[in-house]
Image 1 (tube, rainbow, N blue to C red):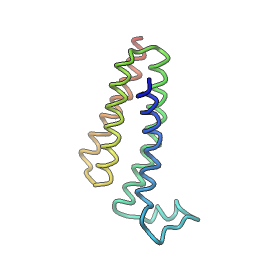
Image 2: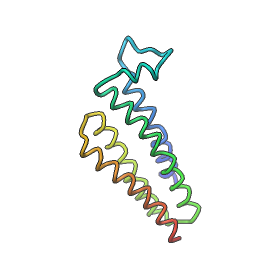
Image 3: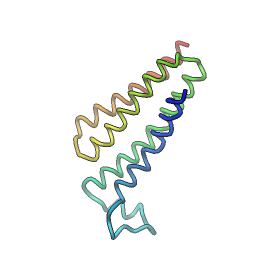
Image 4: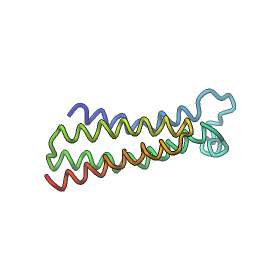
Length: 126
């Protein structure tokens, strides 16, 4: 159970990490208008911001999948496996997005989505 809670915390924090990457190290960062400032960025900063948005999109459906799997008493080992692969896929997704490796990034995204769907399918069978 501890791993599941940790996975929720880690995936919930991923948007913050992306935001830090997008904003860190620039003297001209505008904290009064951060969204406007981010919209003008290019390169890895723009990609980190896009990864941040995707992390916000991926988290709710993953979190509900985990809670549904727990509620329907999917075996803990199965939930742990889906959660572990999901976290690894999302970490890879962020790294690949920031480093502009689009095809591998898409593969990591598909793996993460597959894990999320797996949680829902496993919940149906419990």
